[in-house]
Length: 186
Image 1 (cartoon, helix red, strand yellow):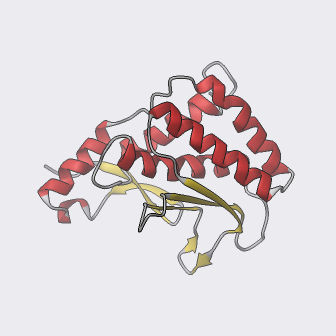
Image 2: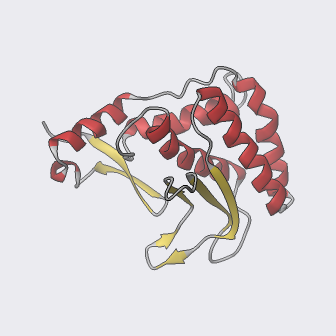
Image 3: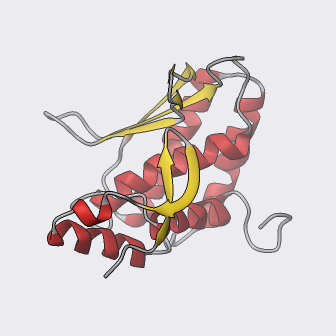
């Protein structure tokens, strides 16, 4: 079976192409990959309860209030995990994105290690111009990193791959929390 075309992600840049590594995965890892691809939604029992936090995050980002933004993002991640019955993850909001020759890093997921809880890190400023990132980019990055956490802790996947299903799960969080159905762009 050939690997279908998938959105691939390298340092925040996305393009539609088959994942070259799929065929190098063991049969067990290919099953994990395909299971991830099948999961297209994160069902939140009460997404409306999260709307005010998304609005507050947008305001804090726009006002360049890093500590407040981190606090709001932590609360948002905690409430999502609580609604899903998943363990919480620490959230860090840092200023300027790190960059290298390959581009800028938008976010980072670090699994739990040596008693430290899982950690989601997102950056609020671009690397080169040091401009505040657009809210949609920022919040989708937070949801992206949270989806890695949910892959392990909620869906109980042994690994977290950037499959089409993964990106659909990220979008499902965005639609439920930031742009509910019926709103412009929702």
